[in-house]
Length: 191
Image (cartoon, rainbow, N blue to C red; front, side, top):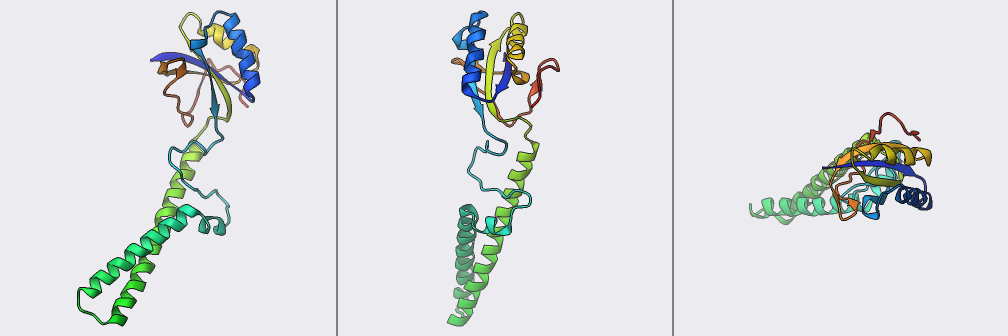
């Protein structure tokens, strides 16, 4: 694991200017990288349309993700209903009713599953603590970590943090934007 010190800036030009200050203080390009941290809730690894607290019900009902789930589950329910009653040599009206009941149950299952996934995503978003912006990350050693933190602090970086991670090919390879940052020595302006 590598030692990393990072600070957040609002723009790429501001972060790039601080990178130049780090180079002037002896850091090399392979030890400095810029990362853009999306706003909370936009870090999902899978496409998911989520409800936000207080969102109108129509928003969820018009979601393409929800519509797809409901249609797929309704069709599956109708097929199951037809298969069960057609296998019993039932009359056409009984099979049609079974298909409608199966479709209704399938649609209900699709709605319930989509709401559960939306609630889980919303809960994940609430736990995220990292602010969005441009994160300037510096691969440091015990000897130069204070220098990196001082340059970030002097340059008015917000949320100066320390981390352990895999630094590969000149960047923080295992950076997780949803993880809670560990403040560097309790310093750094929190914005």
